[in-house]
Amino acid sequence: MAHTQLAVLFTSVALIVIGLYAAIFVDNIIKKIIGISFIEEGANLFIVGIGYKPGGIVPILMPGMNSTWFASNASYPLPYGLVLTSIVIGASTLAVMLALVMVLYRRYGTLSTSVMLADTSHQEEYDE
Amino acid sequence: MNELIPLMVIVPMMAALLISAFSKFDKVIKVFAFVVALCLPIIPLLSNYGVHYFGGYAPIVDNITNILYHPAITYSFNFPQQIFIGMVGILTFLVVFIYLTKYTKVSGPYLFLLFMGTAAVTALILTDDIFHMFVFFEILALAQVGIVAASSIDYSYEMALKYMILGSIGSPIMLLGIGFLLAMTGTVNITDIVAIIRDGIISTSSPMFFLSLALIFFGWLYASGLPPFHTIKSGIYSKAEPHGAALLQSFTVISMISIVIIMFRIYSVLPIFEVLIVLFSVLAMILGVSLALTQTDFRRMIGFLAVGELGFIGLGIGLGTQYAITAGLFQALNEIVITALLFIGFGAIVNATNEVDTRKLGGLLASHPKVGIMLLIGGLAMAGVPPLSGFQSKLMLVQASLSCGYPELSILTIMVSIATFVVFVKTFYSMFLRPKPHDLEVVDKDVPRAMIFAMVVLLIIIVALGIFPDVVTNGISNFVGGMLH
Image (cartoon, rainbow over all chains, first blue to last red; front, side):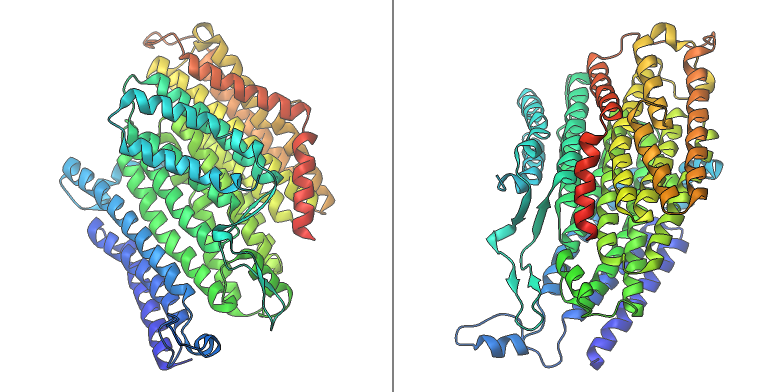
């Protein structure tokens, strides 16, 4: 495995771990959402890393290129296509989450999840 | 006509976008939404079985591995897809019909969410591409959150945000699992991945393969509402409008079976896979029914019962034989119909009393006999009382557990069914049979006709499937047989 690919892998693991910590343990909802974005970007970075090829060229077949040479030298394009879609989905999810936070902030006047989501948590504690 | 296969997704999706864009024209979107909803169960009936390659890119043979690769996103349409898409279509039609008749001014964004959810769940069950599955899994989660947030019930925003936070952790974890599979196989087409595993091109004992299972499994638990996500799942049902909850639970069931079948095709080579499915299913059965016993809010009670029923589905699929998987899928179909009937029926009671606490209700059989009787039949079907549909699928599950050599699982299945019966009878007694409390005001005595119509349609399906289960089970069994061999 190339050094670049290894670095990408470590970075993505670091992003996911930091994100998980923030999403689970931090009380502020905005910081929680930033943590969630870290997890998403960590997963995306990991998938980008899969397509990396040491010394590979951009996977666009230009006029005059030999297709066999292109196939053996270009980096793998499928992960990039997938990540592009994943980024769009992540942005939509983020927008909806922030919209919900805006409504709840107006209602409660705080960004603390322990206050904002207290009523639903109370119900679940009762259930458990 | 294989051209109709993509239309099952495109029609509700385009309808959702058009309704959202022209939501100012109230009367027009009402008629349009009704017509599109009516078409939804008809399209799968007209379509032929087969596959659809997007862009027309047919599979190509790899010269080195001799594997038939699928370069395009592929939709596969067979009997189970037909029956499940048809059932979601019927349910969407009934829910849209209830919604359109309930309000004089309808909300375009709410109809958008209903249709978008239907499109997403249809794509989930049709797709043969694991990344495509992930995309629609996310769209479905957004639609579910929207349906909950759009209700006027207290704390619906809070519950929607909570569900979204959990989903936003579950989805990238699932994506990571898909990434591991992609790294190992170089493809996201499920048939190709299965062929690569079957031909021994990748090692199924590698830690990466196990890790991908663990990550995708986590995403599946979230999508299905199995433990540890059972409380949040029942929570979102209780915070949605009752007709919305009826549709939401069908989305959950279909996303559960779609993802578990994909996992089954890829990971059934690992013995731990079936153990994991059975373990979480048994947990869901026990937790679902025991938490339902403690509820006083009847919407939440049905939510927990629905989670318990999901456990039955998982049990069938986890046992892994042709008969057991058929039983699990038949149970899934029954759960969609029965739980929808219960949500709509209890919705009628909310409509009439503005009360959800069973301790404050009573004597409703006198004012709402039709709803009471239909709810009773629905509850008995869920508990597995003959000759209703729930009985047939649960009997098949008991037989499957016995034939697989697990009599303890069959005993558990019977015990959970009895507990479900107790929960339902207790709730039914509190709401309908005991004397009416003095302070209970029945606000609206007339149950909307659309709700009665929807309940009658669902009841007919329950009785028909109970008397003629072979109509469905034979087709499902043939499909499962093909999948296993």
